[in-house]
Length: 326
Image: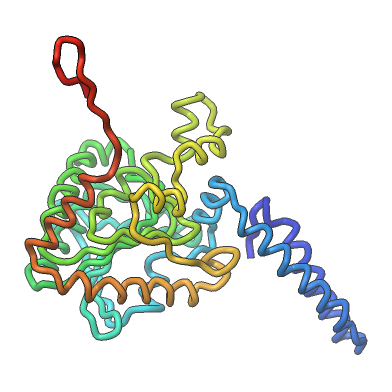
């Protein structure tokens, strides 16, 4: 398993334990006491490390190459998945997948960003950065779900929408803006789940919902830490500092009222126990679906509108001439 810089001491202990077990087995020696001592030390180190992660370390965990992606979770917690392709205008964007599935007996529309596991797949998936046709495909399928009164679940995991010339020529900004407006008016429940990276407009393009949930080591931000550092300080290496400033961790987002719940991950991140993480995601979805389906359409839309209108803080001042200044 690929380990991050701040996990090196944990990696060393894990290797020592593995080597001792192999040596004990090959030489038929009882080293159980020493192995148990190292395992206790390993558990202590893990808890100490992962309970005090910085914002930048959580960003690194959100980007871990072995972290589960949308298709992984679909395979673990859903059945009867049928993928829908194409936007009927330009093409099929494989960075953003959409399809109908069942979770327990509940029919849902599931969509999410999808990254690749190797270079070839990442090129096909565009590293999880969707094009305009991806967002138009998403809206096309969301309208279909609305027609048949099927709830929508979205999984966000993208560094941001693709900023290339072709994407801009095909209306990247318009596609995302259109989705923001239309998702706010869809007459079916929408649950948004940030499972990894939640970067900028690329995340918001499928991010308007009635409940917004974030995995413990995922992040949700108006810009990537590197992009923020490049703009503010002209130095991308100051990304760790930018991470703290952006308040992008799940705990900070919950504190500011941006999200509704932080969903726990196994100690060390979702990649260390993908099935346990998937089960936590499934439980969260099933917890909120009955509540949202029980709302009238009017209440659902009004609550969604109020949710996003209440995000952020502004003040009003009165000048000496009596005019309002915002």
